[in-house]
Image 1 (spheres, one colour):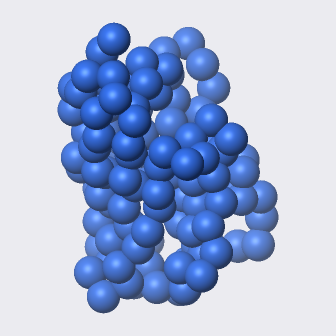
Image 2 (cartoon, rainbow, N blue to C red; image 1 turned 180 degrees about the vertical axis):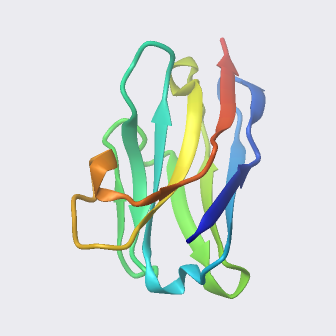
Image 3 (cartoon, one colour; image 1 turned 135 degrees about the vertical axis):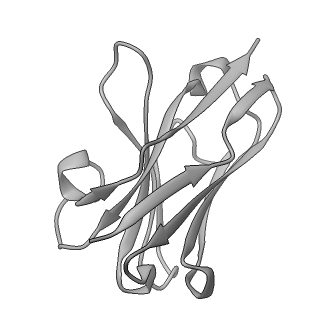
Length: 124
């Protein structure tokens, strides 16, 4: 079993930055691919970014490419999401998740363990 705890969310003005963290306990994350998803009110959960277990491969949704950066520190059992040039449409609850099996990288069903989420609100 893996427990994931996200932090770093908050209220920021458009154009600002936030750095989300996802800390794990129960298992080492170094064996797993990781992803960040987000869900806005009334919308489905959507893919934001993913990173391979080694950190050598990263994937981004088109909507965040060039603005967000996913990274990981396996020694700290933590995954990060640096979010720059934030827009009001980035407002959502952000979730990190573990992908332990070779399933979809882009869809929520491909991930096995989820954190409780952290709220990001971008004001215009």
